[in-house]
Length: 113
Length: 111
Image 1 (cartoon, chains in turn green, yellow):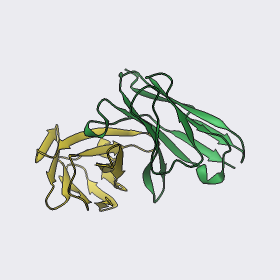
Image 2 (spheres, rainbow over the protein chains, first blue to last red):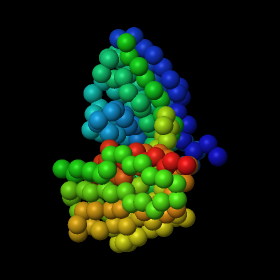
Image 3 (tube, chains in turn yellow, brown):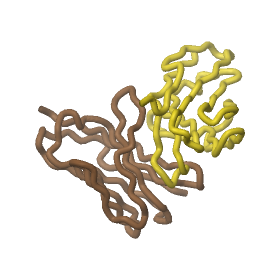
């Protein structure tokens, strides 16, 4: 009964380093999302995907890239990390997009020094 | 632009009390509204999804109502328990593939 799984759960990076966050869902959902949650800013959409092989920009896409090579996986990449990217990142998935229920992962806490 | 506001930001009640959390949104052209629960250091868990054609949804001790015309939703929690302590967020669809989330109400239920 895994649902949405994110790895890693915690990571500390130095400015300029790169990393990838992995999101995996076992519910056969078409739609997948990456959000960041910051104090005072709430949840903001970074990128999303409406199906395997598709990606699109959300509200705050700069500094991030994504890929959806397999339906069950959605990867979020930081090519050159900046302190402003220190945040908690959440992956979510849905069967019918925002018309239906959203299922979230446990989050990945990233600190950029 | 859709804005979602939740009042109060924090609420502390004794165990057993019935309580109401409020959510308001500026654009009433929504097709649903979701209530989520977030425990410290955890992800969001969907509690209730109300379609625009519905006025209420119930799950156990939780009841959510939706009044599109006034841009408001309420989450009613009956007979609160310490295990209900968490942050509760509401969210509405925005721009086809995005959601607008409220900042949440942090609820503490004291034994």
